[in-house]
Image (cartoon, rainbow, N blue to C red; front, side, top):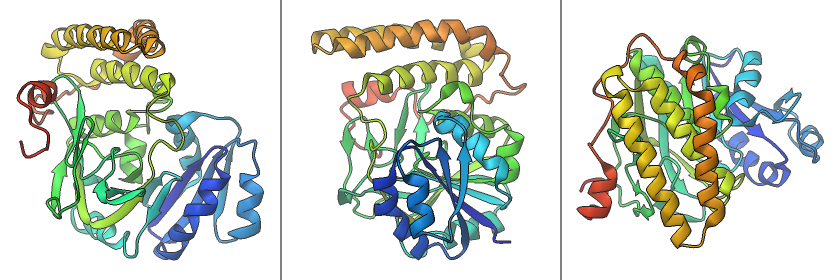
Length: 329
C-alpha cells in the first residue's frame, strides 16, 4: 500500500475535474488518488470512470459540504497520510516528496501545507493559504503572502520551511492517526474555516503544523463559492465565532468573543454604507446561528487550551491603522 492518499472532494465539478485531474495523475505516482463525490447531479462520476480508470471513487449519499464530506469519505481511506486537495488545484512535479520527507523524519509534525500560488496569475500567492497561515489574538486569520486584500508577488521571500498555525484546506496534508484522534473536521462548520479549527485543536494537543516551499501548487480559488456570495460571508462569520468558542483559553473566552461580536457589528454597518445589504443580513444571520449553537459547542472544548496561539495582537490594527500591508511589516 502507498503511504499517501490524495483525496479530491467533488460536487458538480466535472469541468474542474477535466481540467485539473491530469496534473494530479501525472505528478502523484507516490499516492493513491481518490475522488470523493458529494452526490453530484452532473456527470462527474461517469466522466471519471470513462477517462481516469486508476482513480478510486468514493460516493457520499448527500452533499455534506467540505467538513462532513471529507469526514465521511475518509472512513474508506487506509493510507497513513491524507492530502485533501481542492478540485481547482494544479499540482507540480515532485510536489509530494518534500511532504513525505517531513512526515517521515519529523514525527511531531501532524499537518503540512505547500506553497500555494494563484493559478490565474502564477507569479503571485493565492488568497487561500499563500505561504502558511496564522491568527491574531482575536481569531482573525492571515497568511504570509496575503493580508486581507493585499496579495504579495512570489519573489522567493517565503522559500523556507517554518512552523505555522494553520494550513489551507485547498491543499491540506495531515497524518491519518491525528485526523482520527481529532475526530476530523467539525461537521457543524459545513465549509470555511474548518481547517483552522482543526489545526487549532491539533495545536492544543501539542501537534505542529508546518509549511514547505519545496512543494508548490496553483489554486484557482473561489471556484465553488466566490468571495461575493453572501453564503460565504455567513459561513465565515459564524464559523469564526464557533472556532473561538471552542478553542480560546478560558480566561480570554468572554472578553475576546464580546469584542469580536462588536467588530462584526461594525463590519455589518460598513456593508450597509457600501450598499451590500445581503452581506449585512448574512452577518446578522451568522450571529443568530452562533447563539443557537453556543451550548452544543461549549461541550466540544478540549481540556487544554494553550495561551500562545496568536502571531500578533491585532492584524486589523496592524493593517488598517499602522498600514503594514505585508507579513514582514
